[in-house]
Each structure stands twice: as structure tokens, then as C-alpha cells.
Amino acid sequence: MLSPARAGLGWGLLGVTAFSFTVPFTRVAVGAMSPLFIGCGRAVVAALLAAGALAVTRQRLPRGVQWFRLAIVAAGVVVGFPVLTSFALTTASASHSAVVIALLPAATAVIAVLRGRERPPVRFWVTAAVGAVAAVGFASLQGGFGRLHWSDLLLLGAVLAAGIGYAEGGLLARELGAWQTISWALVASAPVMIALTGFAMWQHPPSGTAVDWAAFAYLGVVSMFLGFFAWYRGLAIGPMARVSQIQLVQPVLTICWAVLFLREAITWPTALGGLAVIACAGLAVRTRMVRRA
Image 1: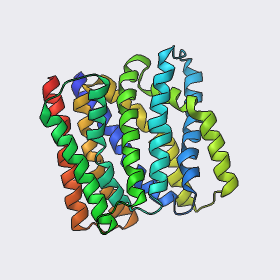
Image 2: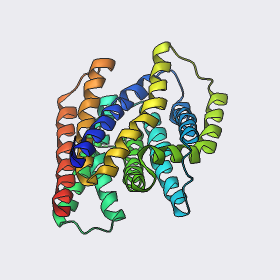
Image 3: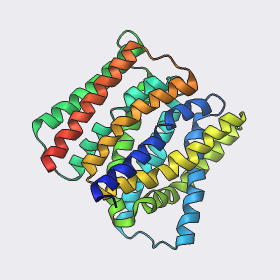
């Protein structure tokens, strides 16, 4: 039988592996469908699955302030990250996006520190800040003449949204359960996402090949639903700081999938930029973890 610490890491790794396909498959889907449809439609698919699971298992309704906290989770991981990355990936490559999104572990750690009113050492803030500068610097250099492209701003916004959703969701999963947390967040946001999906379909009726629809199905079923079963369970088992380190594997896997499935060429700036951001994020998370221990 696995110890709680190993179980948390195992569930976290399973969730991160599921999420690592999200950027490449979103890049595939936006080649044929509108980004608004992809960002919102995947949440509708997941909400239908979530409503069915909650009904079959007869889960109790969240209470009081838990609904507000679920709204925070939904705003971050159901609405913010999927929609922003979908629009960003209409122009940004999957490998480039993976480097910017590599800032997510540090962002999650910072939000968790602020949320928990912790007082980490100064080196935590220094490494987190250096990681942010590295990500912004990489994006601006790749954009040409030291400027950030609009897609990079969207990706940075997605990182902030996901960091908030991950940190709050990890805490709430200890009260509601791992899969119940993402399920209630999906159901709570369903009316808005259904309306936006309908608007997207009215603007641009979706069409695509079997591969495009398979990518969209993965985003709705796995990236938006099943992946969170594992991820939030890992965070709930914890310790959250240690499990969040698993996120450092995600950009590496994403870049590998971009090469294998999308035939993207990995340049030296992309490789070096990714290593810099991952290293800074790892140091930030590690510093917080050691302090808590």
C-alpha cells in the first residue's frame, strides 16, 4: 500500500500527464473551429459528465461560502485558462506556449502562499519573480524586437487564472472531495458556458475532420474533467507544495507532444527559455516546501 505522500505524487503525476496533451490538442482544434467554441464547448461537455456523476452518486450540495469558492475555481480553470489559451493558440505554437505556461507551478505556489497567509523566505519571492521575468523575457524576444505579442499576454493571463483555480481547488477538494470540486465548478458555470457556446456556434458553425473532433473530445472529457479527478485528489492528499512540483514535468511533456504530433521544430531559444522558466519555478516551489516542512 502506498504511503499518503507517494499516493499524492502519483495522482498528481497522472493529472499532469493528462493536462500535458491540452495545448497540442487545442492547437489542433483551433485549426478548424473557433477558439470561443473550443474554450467554452469543452466546458459544456465536461459539465454534462459532471452533472451525471453528481446525480448518480447523490452528492450533497455545497454550502454557504463553498459556492463562492467554487465560483473562483470555475473562473480560473473552467473559464479563464481554457478560453484564454484557445485564443492564444490561434497564433502561438504549442512549444512556445508550453514555455510561457511553465510559469504555472510558481504562480500556483505564490497564490497558495497568499491564500494561506504564509510567510515564506525572501528567496521564494526572488525565485518566483525571476521565473516571471524569464517567461516574459522569452515571450518578448520570441515576439520580435522585444515586444510581447497579444497571444503571450493571453497566455500569461491564463497562467494567473489557472494558478488561482488550482490553489483554491486544492484547498476546497479537502472539504468536498477531488472530483466533486471540479464537478460542482463545472455545473455552476454551465449556464454561462452554454450561452457562450451557443453564441460561438451561431457566429461560426463548427466543422472539422475526425482528428479535429477527437482533439475537441479529449479537451472536454479528459482535460476539462477526468484530469482534474487525479490532479485535485493529488493536491488534496498533499502536501500541496510537494505535489505542485509535479507541474514542472508538464511543459517538458507538452513540448515532446508538440514535436511528435504537430511536427514543431524546437529551437535553442525555446529549449533554453523552457529550462530557465522550469528551473525558477522549481526553486520557488522547493523553497516554499522546505519552509513548510
